[in-house]
Image 1 (cartoon, chains in turn yellow, brown):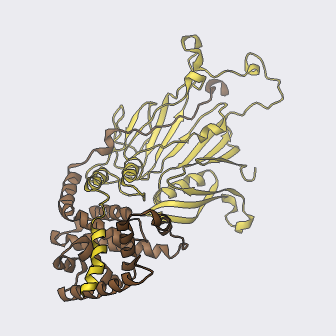
Image 2 (cartoon, chains in turn brown, red; image 1 turned 135 degrees about the vertical axis):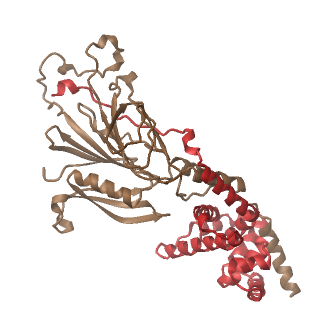
Image 3 (cartoon, rainbow over the protein chains, first blue to last red; image 1 turned 120 degrees about the horizontal axis):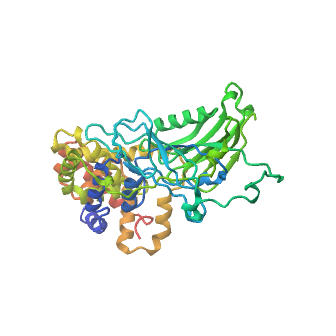
Length: 307
Length: 195
């Protein structure tokens, strides 16, 4: 017995003297953030990283942006996705690089969300989000949690519209306008390249660790474009989707065997490393022109099915 | 048509605001946090040691601590009797480990934690090596014995507290301890365990 104690004593003492991590302060900080509205804790090896993730994105809000734009924009511009929503607040700001000949700033936004109850810190102040609001482009939207009802997920749909620049360009810096194409000024274009078709783009964005409910909304968005979204290999972490394989089929092929269907995209989504944007581009008559799937590191172009 | 809607738009992006709105706490949450911390504070160190020993080779111990604390915090309103906090907290961590182990069955056999531990084995201090050997030996004990030994010898809980955590009588806990220690000593004496 004594020998047994001698053997064990050294091992137990070593274990008892190991430093304690995470510290109590870390725990307290984590709960403070949790109390502010975050509801999920993503896995991470360090507490600091974990706290940061909780603060910035663990709510896992899916944001859906529908961007209405017309003109000559490059499709790849849509790949410029970035984190869109943080725990409870979003600042909508125009990041157009006007100094380098970029487009004029967006002047209005149409904003709607299904995050209820929400208070929207905008002028005019409103809490009614059943309807679409037209607000200045620099509006700050605060999706506030009320003490009575905790609601931390949902989608935010932002529709952006540009209006033509003022008639008198002299009153604005030259850099306000993009450099016009040589052939497009003052005379009809007789060049070989076809003129770009005025078009409309819609974006469906998956960002964050989505919930099933949010994916339903994405499915609906995709369905509205005439396609069917199918998920495979879905993995969860604390009830939120962390990884999934996304297939998008033509809706008209629903009755056909899988192999005979027209498949638009097949993509693996891995939160928190990816954000995914489907870009649907149509001409003004609603005829599909080009579809893209823009992941964090690459863009996948797809021809619309049955064109 | 295009004449009045010329110029392309560059994608304009809402940006994350690192604003103070993120950390506004409602009165209810602040009270809940205070209550949780009051209960949790006295057991923090012991709980972390428990998690480290119990999660060894299966789960990142810090993740286990954090996940358990978050879950316990979320469910604190369900805890009516504060005297049962130990049972409540350790029960959650036990469930976390069990669920994690169940999910691991469907995955490959590669264990990143184990691989990392193997890789750094040679560079660790004697004390750290001892701890690693102890945790490995503990993993070979039956579950209840293992938990009793960890709680008593490493976390430093009293028999009475272990009774509350394990929901067992004093004699059962003592028996688990005696048997666990005996088996552990045998394992640590073996050449492939001791160094």
